[in-house]
Image 1 (spheres, rainbow, N blue to C red):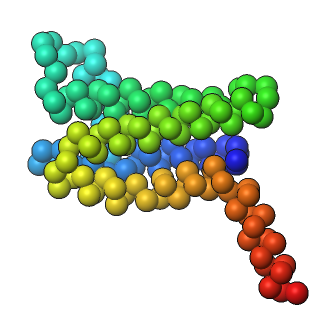
Image 2 (image 1 turned 135 degrees about the horizontal axis):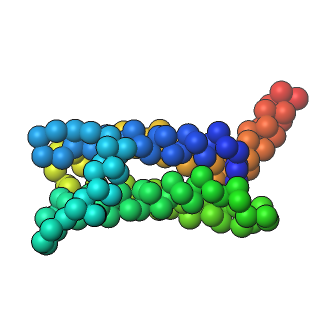
Length: 143
């Protein structure tokens, strides 16, 4: 697992710029997060379906970002990795929850714009073993 600050920052930034479509507009998850958290404190009466999805997405996103950004705090490498994986899981849960609650034309838009985040997640989780495999293959083919 790669636990550098740069990969953690990239994961958070790439998750914030995932594009979603809602109603007749489109936006990025950063806007949805601020709107969803503000809705959590200002809602009066029952949640509408879209508001509930935004609130759930905002809370999961915020929890994931906090976990990823503070994953360097634990003393052991195993604890750091566990906190980073938990934070990444929260970010992915937020995307999945929002995408499946809004299965309209924006559904495809979310999954297309999430590709860079998927690549960064794969690099952070299996980057070192993958690097070792490619290094061995390079030296094997090179002779």
